[in-house]
Length: 113
Image (cartoon, rainbow, N blue to C red; front, side):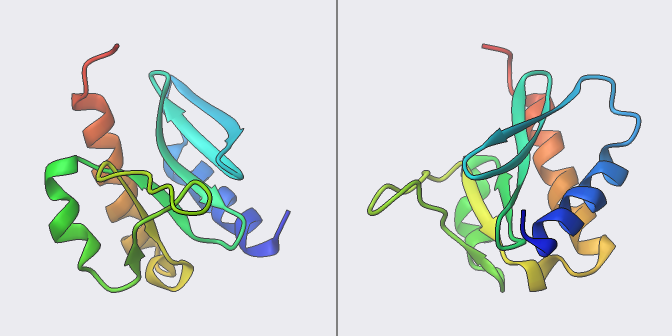
């Protein structure tokens, strides 16, 4: 496991500390943090963060510095409900908390299905 990924996983564990339904799973080539059975974020190999977002906010969020559209292999976009945030864009705990809170709020508002 890459050092940047390991560090990000530890930072995420601190943010999710006390979350009763938290589950960690290896998926999408990274370490996913799930709440209520749904992926919230994932720490990827290069230290970037895969984030589940409300699709309607995609145009606004994708325009931010350090944010890009993730892909699941060549030519397969993950769609407007997901973004990738680069390691430098989440260097501060404040920025990491922003993305985790956004994703967690979205997951909690999404009906179980």
